[in-house]
Each structure stands twice: as C-alpha cells, then as structure tokens.
Length: 112
Image (cartoon, rainbow, N blue to C red; front, side, top):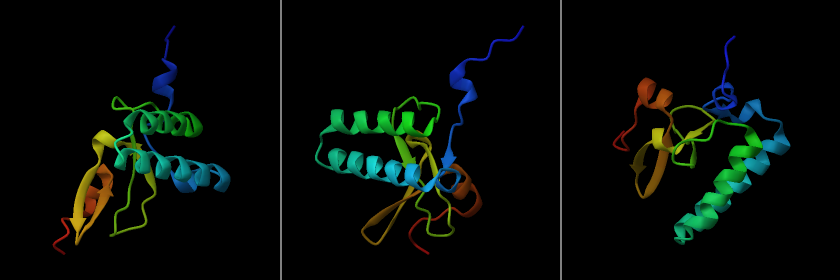
C-alpha cells in the first residue's frame, strides 16, 4: 500500500487559463493586494494574502509561502508558481518575472 501525501498531489504551478475566469480574477486581485502590502513593508498582510491565494487555486504551498506570476515579455505565459523559482530582469525601470520554463527557453535580461 502506497501513501501519497496530499501536498504531493497538488500541482507546483498553475496557469491562469486553467482556472475559471472568476477564480483567475480573484487570484490576480489577491496577488496585486499582496504586492501592494509588500511594497509598503506590511509583510504579514502580504503573507496572509499569498496563503489565501494558495488555498484558492489549490497549488502546493511553496517553502517561501509566496507565489509569483510569470510576466515574461517574450511569450504569453500565465504561470503562477513558487516565488523562489522566479527569475527576474529589468527592462528600463520595470521589473519582469520569468518562470523557470520561460527562463530556460528564452531568457531575457532587459538588454534586448
């Protein structure tokens, strides 16, 4: 008999197009609010919003407790994943995030 932990049955990432539109909108609102709180150094509030987002989409809770959204400018990736796996680059004054797949397939540096 094999026992699989419920955490291992949950995906490590999810794409927004896999969610129903209402859930995707709720997720984006939660992550936008979490970013605003983090920008103001209200880290407890940000962490609580990330936890709520994790429960909403049923993703495996990342070790950091924080999610990231791929904002890669080279494709239309909509991955939501553990923030510790994010690769970032600056284009002008704007920071963009790439998931591991986008970074492996078309790593951007902002110097393109």
